[in-house]
Image (cartoon, rainbow, N blue to C red; front, side, top):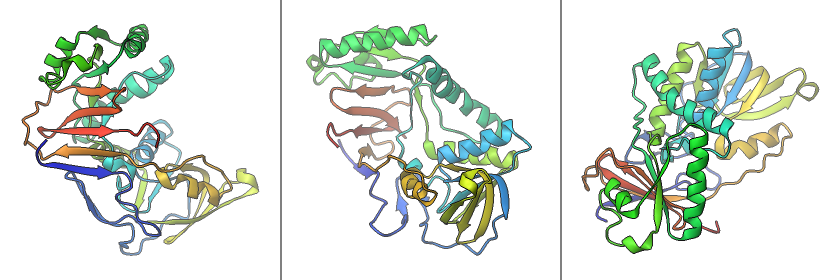
Length: 316
């Protein structure tokens, strides 16, 4: 594959240092060590969200939308989307392990992107290109058939397809080694997004609902008052804030942040690599489906006319 670039979730994290400027082929982000002009954060807020990635911005948007009398303050140590969000592959799968999760996370999530685009006038980059999950053996195919049956019971469109049909759907990508696979399932409702765009959309929507968002503000301590019953005192490098509720959306920093308030969060970072070709170098159509090969620990998606390929380690 020509003109490949690669990235890794730890490529931007150096021991003892903050987030440094990176270029992903999508967007450049400033370092959390780059200090912005001094700002004064509000002295109090009903809710303080720590972390300005997709999860934090989504929390800010939904709380302000549903609880308009609840003040919301979001604090981000770098710039919005500069943590785990920037390197997310952006795969949108509707199917989850339960019906409630499928309807909430999968189906609602896909509908949310259109809602945000209408509200902000910005694009999420969401495309409903469908997905294919491949089986290399009969045991995997049986499991995928169960997945398809469960998806249909949840109201999703899902069907088994032959290897030949799967090959046609993904532009002949399987033709070099067709005997490797024994079958596949198709979920036409799945798709892909640009995670950085979605983060920007959610932040813009949260601001429309009067959420306060501050970038380059580092939380240095969290003190519980009466075990959290009387709220929390949050110390930052730009002043202190009192909050009734604190929401930890700080990604790989969540464990460290939890320790500040005596909460043990079972979380650690793992390396995960993906590679992508130079935009337009392979003439991959935008309709190319998300392709998953669970037995090979691989996934593929179209990226700006090229191909993005990611892999997981069986024993990280």
